[in-house]
Structures are given as C-alpha cells and as structure tokens.
Image (cartoon, rainbow, N blue to C red):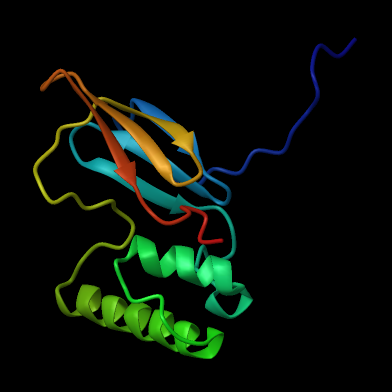
Length: 141
C-alpha cells in the first residue's frame, strides 16, 4: 500500500541556517538570517524576455524602473534592452553577486513569504519589522 505519490527530487544546493523558502515561478528564494536572501534558478534562465513583451508589458516594466514610457513599441524595447545591458555591466563591474538580493540598507531577515508574483514579504525578528520587497516579476516573465 502506498501512502503518497512518489516524486522525483532534485537537490539544488545546501543552505545552512535557512529559515524559509519561497517558490516564485522558476526561482527559489532562500532566507538565511546570516546572509540575506539567496536566489536559486530552477528554470533554464530566469530572464526578462523583452522581445516577448507586448506594449502594456513593456510600459509596466519601464514604469517599475522609473524610465520613460513614451514612444513606439520598438523604442520601448530598445530602451528596456539598453537599461538591462547597462545594469548587467554595472553589476559585473562592481563584482555584485547576482544570486543574492541586495538591499539599500542593512536588514537582518528572519523569514520570507510570497505576497504576490512581484512582492516578497519579509520579517525581521531583530527589528520587529515587516518589510516588502517590490520588484519585477521574480520569474523573469
């Protein structure tokens, strides 16, 4: 007699001291109080596919980045692609770990939870605060 459904498990990594895990459509976010939020891709490459976005999608992505939304679809695509290339070069030039969520201030997180596709809810037991991390679709879609 089988009590459950057998599943295939793939080990993605070992995260010592992880307190919570969130799945966001192709990406797993792991909360580690000592080192913040680690991002692990379980999809091929979680990347914003600018060429697949319609005008509404392009406008939404540009607005999230506080970029101009004026122009034709082609101009919006070029603006988005240029922004992403510049961001990537900036991160590589500063030796930024792209597998980690970076904050503008020092926050010691205790746990995370998915609030919606583009928002993570984060709790800090040290500060007794709740934080929201707002971003583009974490899955890159």
